[in-house]
Image (cartoon, rainbow, N blue to C red; front, side, top):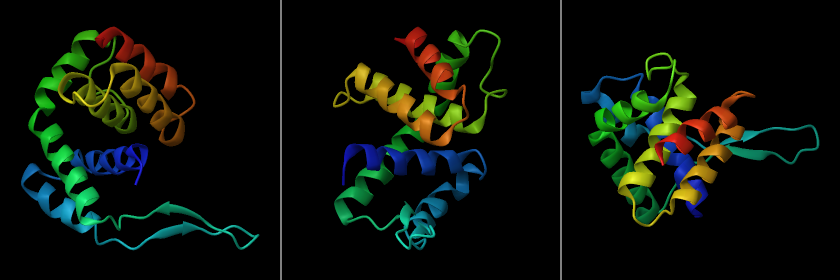
Amino acid sequence: MTRRELREHCFKLLFCADFYPTDEMQEQVDVYFTEPKEEDDVPSGIGDIIHNPMLDTFDGGYVKSKVEKILDVLPELDKAIDGVAQGWTTRRMGKVELTILRLALYEIKHDDDVPEKVAINEAVELAKKFGGDDSPAFINGILAKLV
């Protein structure tokens, strides 16, 4: 599985974090990996896979570990984001944008395997896929201030 696909799984799991109490998050992570594959049925009969949580042991372990590490430093990440987001706080931000910022900032500050430019580019790509029209520019602007 590509790093982009693994990052997308991390994003989806982190997105759930704001909707469940902290003590339920481990259960939600476990449930995530047992969900059925979802396909987008199109008239031509060739469907795009929207969500496929079936990961091998290595990839599943990587995603779980990364999500847990991010959740451990969430207050630190939110404080940094609040410090540069003029006129915005993490409480006012859309959940998609906030989740993307948390993931990217974690990669920038704590993941030595991901160069800053790659973390920013991947965050913008996630924003294009999951966010609104203004999300990529918003994400790029906040991350540029953080680095």
